[in-house]
Length: 144
Image (cartoon, rainbow, N blue to C red; front, side, top):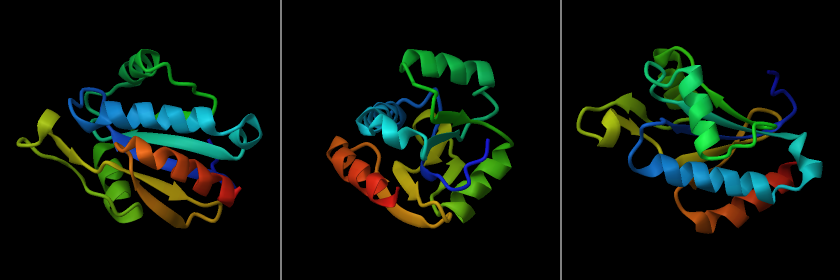
């Protein structure tokens, strides 16, 4: 998909995450629901798995079904593990790595990252805090 000239809200998760990922997914869904239909064509929500070895396309589809994800403008993405980690660390400046001591075996950020139409990072938000939802929606609309 081409995300050029679109505002993006990005996060990192994995389907077997026992801690922050379910909260982040629920909050991302609420954000999507609050963005009116006029805005939906100009924004993409992107969730990258940090566990692509276990999170197959089929597993991601199951996760979407479990959380009733509307895939019109929300993409659950997978790929090469090193590329995803590099994208997180170097592209979005958030930590992503395997960590046997972390819950679920992965250390990753709870941040949602807002990217403008010119590929500039415009904000970082705690994706587990539902109090951030109206702020994120307001910031998204200001970039459209």
